[in-house]
Image (cartoon, helix red, strand yellow):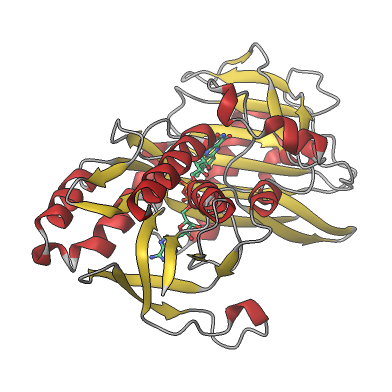
Length: 360
Ligand SMILES: Cc1cc2nc3c(=O)[nH]c(=O)nc-3n(C[C@H](O)[C@H](O)[C@H](O)COP(=O)(O)OP(=O)(O)OC[C@H]3O[C@@H](n4cnc5c(N)ncnc54)[C@H](O)[C@@H]3O)c2cc1C
């Protein structure tokens, strides 16, 4: 039996797992994805001049409000993060582009998933394994799941015996997925059904992301702006575009321009279930081209990703999800409070503290 199973290898789950592991507990992390980091996501795109990293989820980290939680100095010292200083603009609802005040942004030259990898050394992680049900035992938990990605040659994908038993569980996955995981056993325990009710109050917005690669000969300046280097555009009030940037300006070895475009919540809500994702991506680039420069419409290559649970729009407003009746089960994630990388780390820390108390 494990001491703790952490379900989800995003920033919150890895933070909790690392803290519990460092306190001497036997911890197993499981994640359904092949990579680590969840929404700290980096894709490798093969381009004519080589492979390039693209951040299609979390874009950068900003200075933390609570400096005691901040991994920034360690990550900067390790070369995982570096200051990213794009010229910054805001795209208004009427299409006007205005110069905006730059923030302090830290990007990862190797791709933002490097932040997750920096938290993982020493941890036992079963990737490609989706937890499907969670059942309370007289002492501890039974976690049933299924291996994904059959045929992989990766040794870390070897099938984990299912079910797994653990003295305690940290559920570090988006609230709607956590509700589905817990719901099956909710009738067996009042504490669980209360947790499901709380999880159901949390809301997420979807995001559709286009990653577009351009010719190395392409000038990547924005219309009516002379921007020789990196740029980023926020579209907080724009009906279609939430954010876009020259992602390749985060890299130290970039040879070809890559632009990442994140859609607004409204655009994602209307397009998330479409099967012709290529067309959805083209629509995002077409809108970007209308406001920011015609060259954006004609990439050499494009990939599209949909985030069903992208940004938290209604958080739980508590650092974690817990029930006094079930001290050895906690839920954590950015959906608890904060809705960003700092929120995920804060929640993961708190989850580890509570589980350590329960296991004393
Ligand atoms: C497009 C986009 C841009 C963003 N930009 C920024 C930014 O610039 N700055 C910032 O601070 N934040 C940003 N964020 C938010 C930030 O990425 C998140 O707040 C943070 O990464 C959330 O971490 P988490 O651990 O809570 O959840 P996640 O990263 O979602 O991790 C959950 C993990 O659980 C796994 N999982 C789910 N279900 C199961 C299951 N049943 N079994 C096993 N594993 C499962 C998933 O594969 C995933 O790895 C952005 C998010 C998006 C989508």
